[in-house]
Amino acid sequence: MVIVSPSLAAANNGNWQTAHRWAQLLRASHAVRITTGWPDARADDDQVMLALHAARSAASIAAWAAARGSHSLGVVLTGTDLYGEFAGRPEVLRSLALAARLVVLQDQAPAALPAELRPKARVVYQSTPQRQPLAKTRRRLRAATVGHLRDVKSPRTLFEVARRLAARPDIALRHAGDADGHWADEARATQAQCPGYRWLGPLPHAQARALIQRAHVLVHTSLAEGGAHVVMEAVRSGTPVLASRIPGNVGMLGGDYAGYFPPGDADALAALLLQCRAEQADAPDGTLLARLRAQCDARAPLFDPEAERRALMQLVQELQDPR
Image 1 (cartoon, one colour):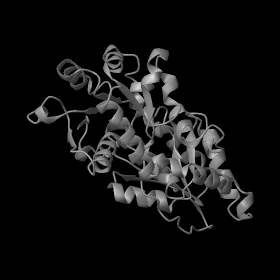
Image 2 (cartoon, helix red, strand yellow):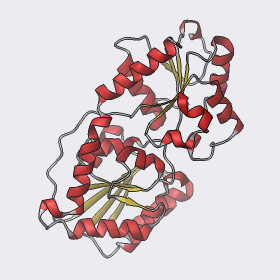
Image 3 (cartoon, one colour):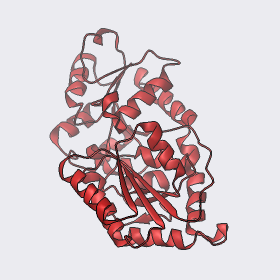
């Protein structure tokens, strides 16, 4: 089996994390390798392809279909394939048509596909090991945001929230992620003006996961997501999520989740943070944080590694046996 990923370890992004994790989960029963493009020097032995990113892996997808046929080809759809800059582009539509199976990472994603392609869709929730929830202070509210600073992640929503809460040192906003150009400038400016906000820059994955585990809430401001890794990691760490109401988040957290705000709405997000902070001294069962924790706990089994492994094994079986 070959997994085509546009990014490798140095990028430390969602594509690489998914490719690396899937390779680990499948290696107990399959020979698996990861490459950025196909064909390559080791292509002769490949029997099944999983290609991450319908747009960025379009050339590899087309080459596989031409050489091996479509029956053993699975294409994994990212947020930008489904909802963002690549949605509807000719190379994406061609990749969707060529694939035998379309892999999506949350249960709202099939609705974004053309109706005739939805029967090919398979939902494979991402996974991570469960972490023990930590005891957390009531003296302040710690909110963590994890993700590279770029337009689709809407970091400006968090900057605006920081300014609205500049007089509230009891609400600590910690922002991890790489940034270039004007985003780095805006993060530094926000940090200089807002005592509660700190931009931490890029963190190794283990440190980012620890940041999420220590937080009272994960704040996720994205405008579009295929299925955010950090949301799943928060749920599996006992950390509730305040998330933009977009299909990629609803597909992971559920339609009735109480922690949504409209995308880009800094006032609504600030109000949720203020409510969480105001209720920290209240009875544990009567607070928004307690409700969000319970809802996240109910979704946590979806993101168990064994559940992901079973879903992947079923997918590979379908690609090996097209009947």
